[in-house]
Length: 66
Image (cartoon, rainbow, N blue to C red; front, side, top):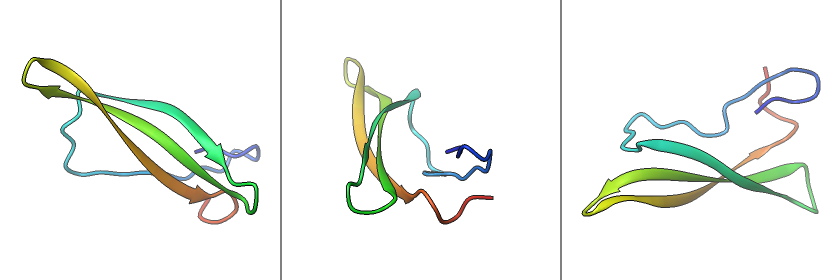
């Protein structure tokens, strides 16, 4: 993620990747605090082709940027 002041942080990291591709599908901003939930889709091989597997990760918009 990148803020307006150009500071960055990693919202999600994985070392055991089985995805053919990863797509940022969208996000939901919290109405109560400075946090977001990020929706990602991983395209993986399955029995007859590929399929998308969705996951949600979240992070603060104020803490952890470098």
